[in-house]
Length: 61
View 1 (cartoon, rainbow, N blue to C red):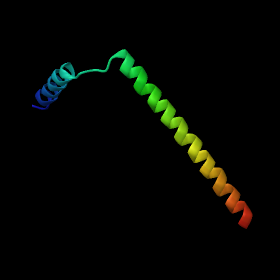
View 2 (view 1 turned 180 degrees about the vertical axis):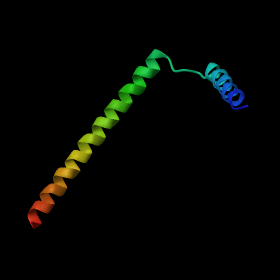
View 3 (view 1 turned 90 degrees about the vertical axis):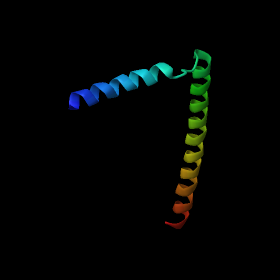
C-alpha cells in the first residue's frame, strides 16, 4: 500500500517535470546576473548601515 502511493507520487512528479517550461541559457544567465547584482547591492547597503550603527554606538559608549 505505502509503496504504491510512493511510486504513484514519483510518476506524477515525473509527469509534471515533463510539462515544465525550462528557461533558456540566455534567460538563465540574465537571471543569475540579476541575483548577483541585487545581492551585492544589499550586502553593501547592510555593511554601510552596520558601520553607521557601530559609529553611533561608539559615540555613546
